[in-house]
Image 1 (cartoon, helix red, strand yellow):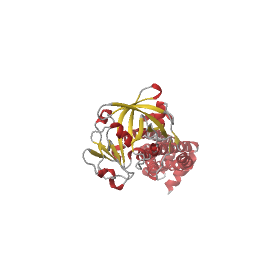
Image 2: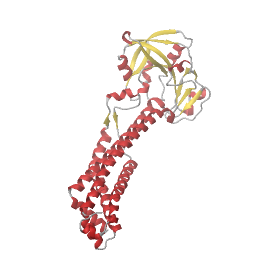
Image 3: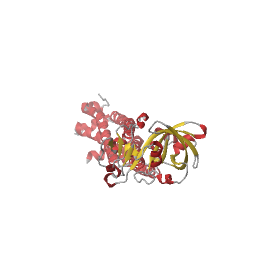
Image 4: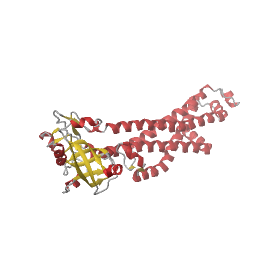
Length: 389
């Protein structure tokens, strides 16, 4: 108790030096929590959007299908088995995928045609618009595709494809809906068509390339040539990106923490140098070297405690406001190929706040202890005379 009182009086007596250290350390608290919360919020938000718009509860892929190899699309199609048509009693969405070419305003552009049932409920795609009764092929596109091809609602564009027998054909497609989605992998370079219409065009009645299950994780009922892909597999690109961002986040974490700890370390070294007569007097009066070391260590730890209080005073309102208002992302992130919303809402979990606070407190205490060990080598007479060996 005496050591706590002395440490508190010494901190208050240091005046501006103490509060400068506290402010720097509190900024480290707030910035670390903000950065980690932003990454956590992006991860949760992106995964939720991908599940709703693309992944569902999981997907069954044709065994030859490879989303990164367009040449596999020619052979990766088969009849949808009855057992997979209604997997686990959940709604499903068979999707037929093939390559094609469109000619907007006389230009040529390669695209991917995706056929999906207009009444599907497995994904959030606004496929109901594909029920339009028009002579042209009703087509659904995303805002990114509309921008890159300079297409608008009601535009008619020529589509050319090659069917299962290798014969080329062409028809007119009409844009009946332009959807806004954060998931660029269901938007960029893609045209969504009614499934039966695309099956007829490709001469593949009842066939599809992948089968998306409902929003709840599905059981693996796959059978040759169908292979089940769960949510972890389908979101691995996002997980890898978040992991890489986390590494850079930890580097920034270390830099911020190092700057704050350096300030504490310098303060403790300076305090020991300036207070060497006081230290010698305390030891001469009977205070053990261990007690003096504890005194300086407690002073350093109290920097961390005061910084946590100051950080809470201005950090909680600021971080809470951003968690509500969100963090606006630049327009260029649309080209990253990942699910990134216009705004990311940080998530500050209790584990994040508690873990960061404890980590900083322990680090500050250790850094305060390191220069305090020098006190063990002091001789009281030398310290009283102003000597510091």
